[in-house]
Length: 492
Ligand code: BG6
Image 1 (tube, protein in one colour):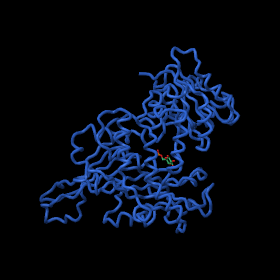
Image 2 (cartoon, protein in one colour; image 1 turned 90 degrees about the horizontal axis):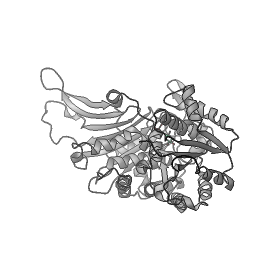
Image 3 (tube, protein in one colour; image 1 turned 45 degrees about the vertical axis):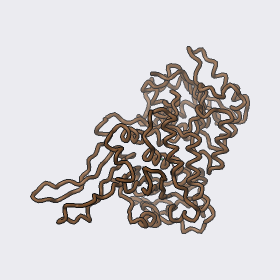
Image 4 (spheres, helix red, strand yellow; image 1 turned 90 degrees about the vertical axis):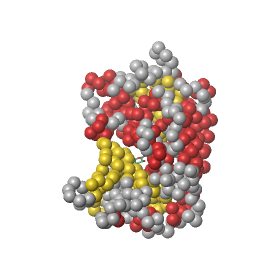
C-alpha cells in the first residue's frame, strides 16, 4: 500500500547527510514505487541555491552514494520535479509560516508534513521551538519530526532535548533515527529469534557462555574530525548502535509486532543492564585511540593528526565494554562489546558462544582444540548466519573437524537489500515508529554510559595513541576479556 501524500521538509538540505543518505534513499524509494502518489520534498538551508542548483547538487550525491549509481535522465527528472528549495535562516519565523503553508495542497487528502532535521544538533532547539509556535502540530500524527543522533551528549542533555521535543510534539510524532535498526540483517535478528522454535529454549544463561558484539571499521575519522572530537566512540557508536544490537539479542519475545510492544521489550533490557560503578570502570571499560602508520602499504595519519582534531586530543576512537544484564535469562552471562576505527577489517558481527559439551566421548582426540559451538550473526559486510559445529571428517576412524552451517543473504535471497535509510523512511511515511528510538530508550542508554564518561573525563592522563592502525584496539581490550579467561573471537 502506498503511503498517504506527504510533504518532506529537510532542514540542513545542503549538508552531507542529505546528499549521502536521505535523498539517495528517497530516490530509490521513488524508483521502487514506494513514495506516495503525491509528494514533495522541500530542502531548507542557508546556502544560496535556487531549485535547479539544489537539484543538481542532489543529483551528484545520488550518483556518488546511491547503491544504484548514476540516475537515468527521465527518471531523475520525474523525481526532481517534486524537489524544491528554500533558502532561509533557521531563526526566521517567516520560514516556518511558509512551511506550514505547504500543508495547503490541492491533493486529494491533506498531506503528512514531515520535518526532517538533518542539521548539526546545536540547531535542534531553535528549529523545534520555532515549530512550537504552531499549536496545531501538537498530537496530530499528520505532523512528524525526524531527528538524527547525537541525542544529547549525556543523560542530562538528552533529557533536556527530550523535553524540548515533547513540549511541541507527542512521543508518537517523534522519529529518532538509529540507522542500524534499518539494516536488513539487524531486523532479521527478530525474525531469526522469534520466527523459529529451535532457538528460544537455548537462548539463555543455561546454554550460552557469553555474547560478543563487534562493530569494527577500517576507515579513520576522515573529514568528520570536528564532530568526532565532541563525540568519541562511546557516544558515536556504543550509546546507540551497539546497545540497540544488544537489546535485539537480549529482549524477551514480544507478543506482537506493535511498535510500542517491541520498544517496551527493548527498554526492559536497557533498564536491566547492571550499572558500572565509578570504581569498576577500569575493569569494565577500555578506551583507545589510533596512531599513524602503514595500512596495506599506505601511510595513514594518527587520529591526533586528522583535520579538525586537537594535537593533544584524548577522544577515544575505540571502546570496549563488559556488561551484565540482571534478569533471569541473562544472569551471569557477560556481553562484551567493542567498536573502533582503523581496525583490521570492516566487520559488524554478533557471536553467541555456547557452553562446552558437558563430556567429550572422544577421549583419544585432543579435545582441548575443540571450540564450543558458536552462532554468528553477520551484519556487514557479509550478511548471513553461521553456526559453528563439529563434524566427523570423512575417512577411517573418528576424527573431528570444525564446520560451518550457514546461510548467506547473497545466495539465498538474490535481490540486493535496501539501504537502511530506505526502510526507515518508508516507516516514517507509513507512521510506524517500531524501528526508532523512544525517549526512554535513549535516556536508559545514557544512564549506562554516564559513569564511564565521567570517569574518562576526569582521568586524562593517557598513553594515547595506544593502538596501531590495523590492530583490534589497545592491549587493554585483550585484558578486559582475558581476565575472564576468554578471548575476542576472530570474525568468521
Ligand atoms: C554512524 C557513525 O552512526 O555510523 C559513524 O556516526 C560510523 O562514525 C557509521 O562510521 C557506521 O555505519 P555503517 O552503516 O557504515 O556501519
